[in-house]
Amino acid sequence: EAQVTQNPRYLITVTGKKLTVTCSQNMNHEYMSWYRQDPGLGLRQIYYSMNVEVTDKGDVPEGYKVSRKEKRNFPLILESPSPNQTSLYFCASSLGTSRGYTDTQYFGPGTRLTVL
Amino acid sequence: TQLLEQSPQFLSIQEGENLTVYCNSSSVFSSLQWYRQEPGEGPVLLVTVVTGGEVKKLKRLTFQFGDARKDSSLHITAAQPGDTGLYLCAGRGSSNTGKLIFGQGTTLQVKP
Image: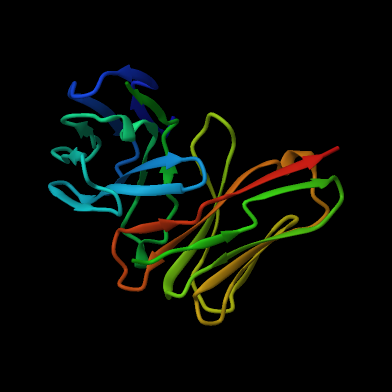
């Protein structure tokens, strides 16, 4: 089944304890992206990757890191989490090869992170 | 910074009513997408509009991209309880990068 998977789905942690949220897709997509969703703010893009070894900042990259060493994986790293990073996080992927990158973006199920 | 203002943020209507959700910006977008999200799940793409003035229909849903590609609307005819959910618009900048800007979302509740 074609899908985007995220792990963990739920995570409660404490301030300053490094964590990684994994994202994997099995559709051979070139484009992958991370978003956070907060009430009243919609989704805000954190980082995106057009292809392997190519990453770029979205609108809210502060406090996050990403890497794209393989096409299928795009982990999100919080080196020193803080309470304001408590949020619902979504990973997404798309083919990324069609004109204008207007192709369908597939979202993972989300990771609910709480930083105490 | 490009922004997308979505309105209304909340909408509660009776089954059978019509409604329109708006997505406005002062910036030009190369494309605009509409997503629907249900609780506990990720957003699911409904439609992508690319050309100024473009109108697309998906059953009872009609999507329109403004002539200047700065705004879009979603119109639902004869809403049903199954239409309940969070509707999000998302625009891709005219410089055609991988950046995607989302509106704040519209929470729609359709009562039977």
